[in-house]
Length: 345
Figure 1 (cartoon, rainbow, N blue to C red):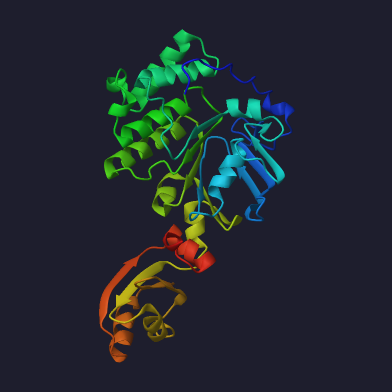
Figure 2: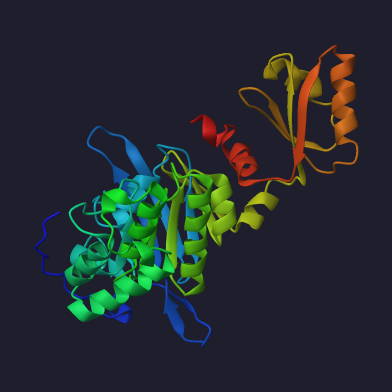
């Protein structure tokens, strides 16, 4: 990164001039959607259709998760929303601005935390933030004041003078979040924000996301981590092969599988043979999926689940290794929709 700031892009027009969709706000007045896509599609020159007819409305102030396996179309979708990928068809509005028609003003209302570290290693921690603020047109005093505020918010005020190379992975990720929100964007995009982080750093990032949401920040979370989406998101869009499969709150999605219990069963035989034994022998069975080392059962009513599994295996001469019983998760939803485990993609 050059040490000379570029001229900031022009400011976006008022949202009311863009034709963005509106929803009723708390005051009763219409509130534009933070992000809206209509028929958004991307087909690459080699014929691969990465995203197909994607329709989304993301509400101001919510954490919205795009959940799917690698190659599902998440990164391409975010690329189109953040102006780095040109759509083949459809429309995308972010902060009320058409990102394809008016990319420069659109970028002013967007904050992005990419998967890779893009911090300027020639600058200190605080200088990275001040430079970002100056790029977006802030006066030096205002950029410095906001930098100090954000560093305190992400717990890096004690590292303001440090070189970027001295930061741990978790600290660098927190700094990139602070940088992305310094210019107060309408929408913050977090692309796999906790991949590769240790558990403590992961929790720290999650806490920052919750704090930003509490302050009214709209956040689009791109992840293949189902637990992360479940814990952080107000709503989740599950996508695969470029298509939207399901959309709703985590609770709504989990209710959609029509089951209240999930059992993962492993044995000394292969999952296909075990499934053949359990199918038809488990009361309330709604669905059955083969995993690499186990069989996943979704069941309505768990009163006799444990004993029915044990009895069916014993009658077939199969030795069970493990039975794990839990409530439905977003993994259950993905399996229900696709027949495959997201982690196996």
